[in-house]
Image: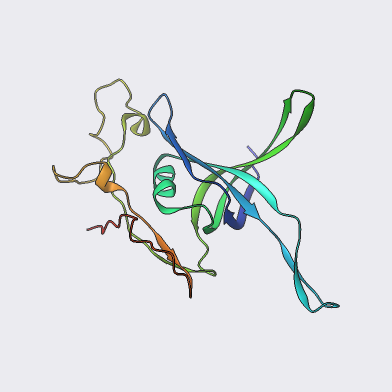
Length: 176
């Protein structure tokens, strides 16, 4: 199948929404704002062009990492499958641009990030063993009894030179 794969660079434009599907699969969604710029030689200044807003959806472990790592305003880069979806509401219609992300990360050209590897147990839905009673037996990362899914969430802290945001409220998990 021919799928359009795209890479986008921009800023997280909305709060990250997180939920679980009926089958227990983690889903995160947000919008990214992409504003191209060009240098106007006559004025000697950078000029912003029209901002494009794209809806982004992430699944499974990517969704869990995105909801823990990103906040509104963060500079990001992502890649994924492009979809252009027509919509109608009342007497209006239009097109919505959506990306099902396969990778999302902070734009390191605009700040610094500290990476923390996360180990998780697979859910029954992710392992494809839903309803068989085998959840957590195959494909499960090694974990001690006192570790829980809550402590398996990693974080990414992003700062830029001169950035005075207090990032101490974000949990930091150091993986073994």
